[in-house]
Image (cartoon, rainbow, N blue to C red; front, side, top):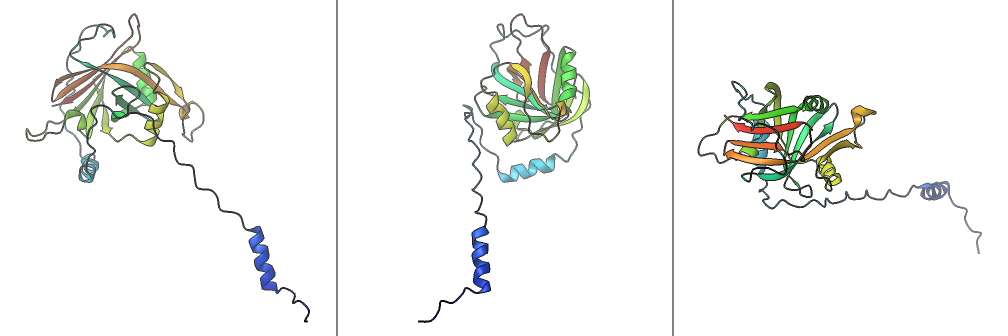
Length: 248
């Protein structure tokens, strides 16, 4: 019998490579599904054509002569003495301190948002306005033809006024993953304001996510006018906030 052959250089190289090979990384864990519930009056999702139209429509200016806010009832709206003509919804204003503030409307804090609007104002600026005691935000858009059945809250963009001063354009958008994460964290909160740990790369206070949540009385004046009045607990002397959606 012949002597056993010694391994060649190629065989040694392949053996060394296979022994030092790093095992593949495991697949990333799937994101945790949201436990938020569908609202009872869930609207049908828009078609792709409508989403494209909305993105194009955002590039056109809306011409409005002046801010036209409906008249406010005198005095503060007490949560224990609200009119029966409206319905109560949960409203959340949130955003990074130096980022644009967003408004989320939910049927209840445990439901998915039925409306998300990115307002034309930085969060820290809105905080200063709230410190003045009264804030009126008017969101205006142009009237549509009578045959157009688009509801007021389905409009893609509004001209925004804060306390009578034009601040830019507010845009309706679909709830993003970060929006849903915020709503998930706050699903047990009915009213309050605080700071949440944000995912921004900015360090310090500017990278913090701040929020304010309250109950709102939603009053529908007509197909071209809706108002959200923030409800204050009885005996609370906090700021007053009213948000008007108007077609003119």
